Length: 492
Image (cartoon, rainbow, N blue to C red):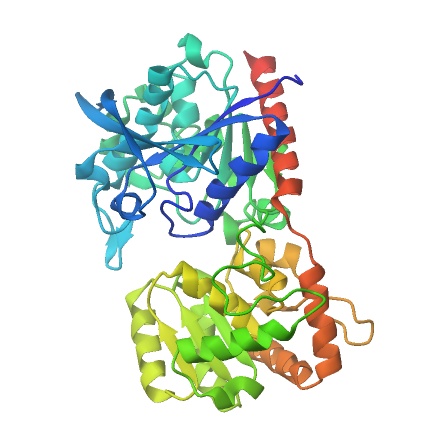
């Protein structure tokens, strides 16, 4: 059990190639930290238009693989690149499925053929492993887009010697997105009809790809301990709480780490000035630079600058923000936002930008460079999420001395300790009830402390001293892989 493990990472997105959210950060970072622990890792993801535009050197392998989809056999091109020079990344290419502006949906809704796209991708992952003769000890797969992998290994590929000893670990990053499709789509999968039942992949007369990962995976995990507990209850389980409780012995919570090679103000190439725990002076320069970036008056230098980087969706608490935002602008503050998402929030923030041009900077976009500048230049970072499996921006914020104001849910609760001025202990502010007044009160509390420079500096130093490196999380995943292998070998 102590020999190096061969890990196949199957993910619908990974930085630096394509990203919509935190999953991409995890998929782009965790393999790099598993490699020094002795794991041989390969990563497989779709060859999106975003990947084509990323500018990273990719090689077309010159061969196509044949992939079954329903009654048809389709061809997939295979491209290869590298993550951190050591980890091969294979891209599954088929333009009709992946050469699109967005990964899963447009602002108007999901792509109509997501079932076809990701059933195809999932089967392509297994056929690619065959093609390159990579026999994994563990397939670590992520989200509903890859949820069918363990169902395949327990059915169609059950007798394939390449996967004879392969265990599966399924990571749930956000249980609200489950990959639900009409039952007529079952024929696309090629799975035996008997798997379509309430104990299998059937969910209220539809197929549920995330449920497949939960039912058939050897081990399941979420991206924080608190979230692994929350999703076993109706409020957070989105209908899957029953099956999760049933599998609770195989359900784990491992907090996401942060890749401090990419997120550290002492060497961040995106910043106009560097700073660290011992010398915070560069943070003031970063604030000035951020105000210029958004065209906001430099008079805001002395006021608390509130930042948000997020998908613009109800889940992220924007309905709470909408209720208090006009009251928020009655205070002496600046506000900067970066993100894309639901049209109603595009409209809301367009209105805010017009109404408060001297206080609000709005950018409806995805921009990694600007995200780094916000983390460094803001004073407070707002994350009032309805639920948050892990959250990464609050952890980035800590490292940059930008103080998080969060709702106490999921990974936000696991990573943020409410600051107590009397003891000087804590790294941020949090509120429990999903309530806009409670959210506003915590912002006010934070702004009150901002006006006390000594205490504020103490809080900044506490935040920057917090350590959420991937090293710790990677070791926890290695243990989880071994548990999955033990379970696999115990049942085979």
